[in-house]
Length: 121
Image (cartoon, rainbow, N blue to C red; front, side):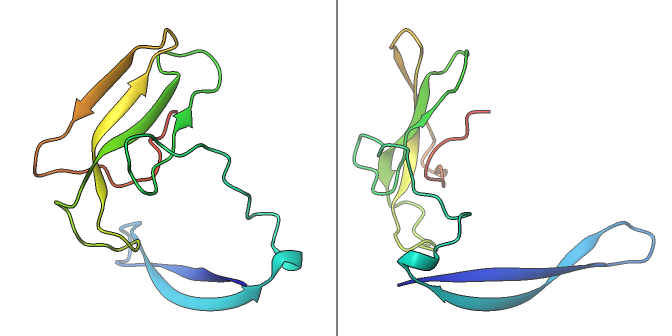
């Protein structure tokens, strides 16, 4: 069984004339089974990232560009808040060019990448 939780947001002005908004939260939970999975839930098709990052995924470029694929690497626990269920984050961004060369960008000890795949847009 899969349980989905949907956040309901009602926007309202914070201060008159500022154009700012805040969110008032409400939550609902709906149980779904294999036969009732909404078509908005799609299966993951990206392959797992190499280099032992538990939930990492490889993002590939669609169409021409300087980057053919990108993924996070360098598992670290130096930012251990664990909000998504584990305390392992990435410290390195790796990219593969269309020619097959791999380039890496390592973050300083005070920073981490906090996502599953990098966004190639």
